[in-house]
Length: 205
Image 1 (cartoon, rainbow, N blue to C red):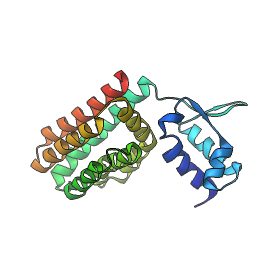
Image 2 (image 1 turned 45 degrees about the vertical axis):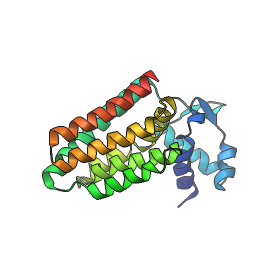
Image 3 (image 1 turned 60 degrees about the vertical axis):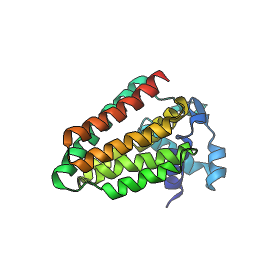
Image 4 (image 1 turned 135 degrees about the vertical axis):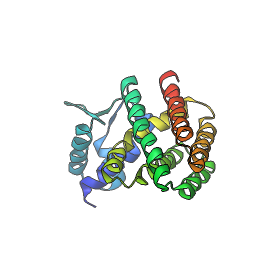
């Protein structure tokens, strides 16, 4: 992995996912020190993130991590809903629902209720697993492109709503139960309810 790739992954998965970094500028030198590279690959990585609209490059000040706007959050949840409901319908129809793996991820979450960052990473894996099970590589890649936004939004939601972790686990249980029953309507409804609840937490606090 090149220095730029290392910096890109670290910035995307660690710095951008930190609730404390929302509304702040990224210190290139601090990041360089943390991952052991020069500032050049940090700058290159920040250019990539700016192109993805994940940071804003401000002249003479650096890279700014703008908090997700209401519109960005709403659009993220809308797109997730479209993809995840399709994935439920497709995998139920083809008998490819990864039930055991999804259940294992829920069990992991039960042990991570005190670790918001890890909890949300497993949360993302839970949903991504269902999408990947469609076998549609382009769809899976598109969904993977939402990763940084998903993690950022998810961590913020956990900090805003007390007990949200336990609620998420229950909602995931409901999704898996519906998928296991083979009821497409119930599965898509469970996914919609889960995403709608998260959206309300994010927009209303």
